[in-house]
Length: 338
Image (tube, rainbow, N blue to C red; front, side):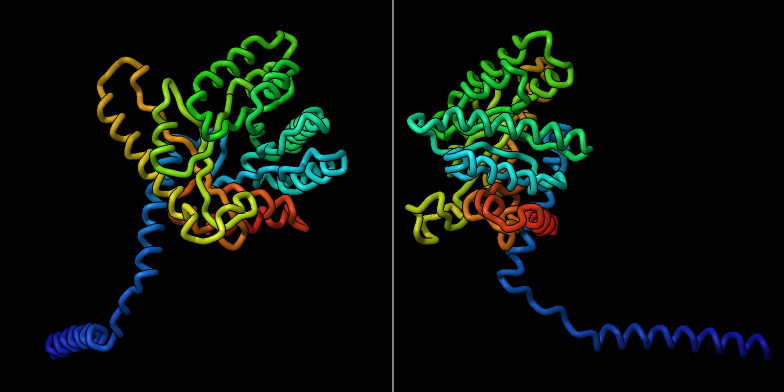
């Protein structure tokens, strides 16, 4: 009697589970079809995640820090007067307060007739002092490069002022190997009075350039023995920096940085396969540069280029003209991470 009752109970439980499964299968609403925009976003996120994990294993190190990367460029008139220098320093001081800025680029209009050259030297020294201040505070310091002025960087190196490198104009990109060698020779030639810390950090020469097409990016990547460490890729959105581009069809768009990154990594992988098993270290494939999206980038749209595969973004006025640069940097980093 007890055995039969137990069998009946087991059968009842089994039938109950079957009934529940049938109910779930029959009455669970179907998953709605994804819209084209949703599909595009999913593909972009998948590509971005794949590229980012690959890139992190090769190109992020003590020099660059963690993804995503944020670059801030000075405004063209940053050295027009002592007041503008003070305003520029204040903005960058606020922006870098939490270690959220990876790269600072001194990019101004050059005009030797109004003392700009000497003002730029003053600005560079003050930014270098800010780098050291951030380091003493235990905050990640930023990389500091100068746009299109190798002589100023050489002057800084000779005086043991901490500057990390130079941003080379796109039409001069073919000169990057020679420029890198010149800067490295200057570092090696610094006097023995330089501290070991200063020498060690200066030896990590950083050279970047800009590009507006896949072919231009490939040309710089294929430079021998080594191309740029980073690329500014644009123009992503309408911006005051390119007033000649007045409509969306004139822009390169926010997806170009990610597409360039894909192409460069494909080239990197192809080179690695072809050189595998070769004991000659000179044939080892060069790692691709870090890709910054640039052009009209703000806290509202900075996530889009990263979603398409960019390593980070670069901006000018969004940070430099902000009421609170520190808060804007926080917003941008949060948006890129999300």
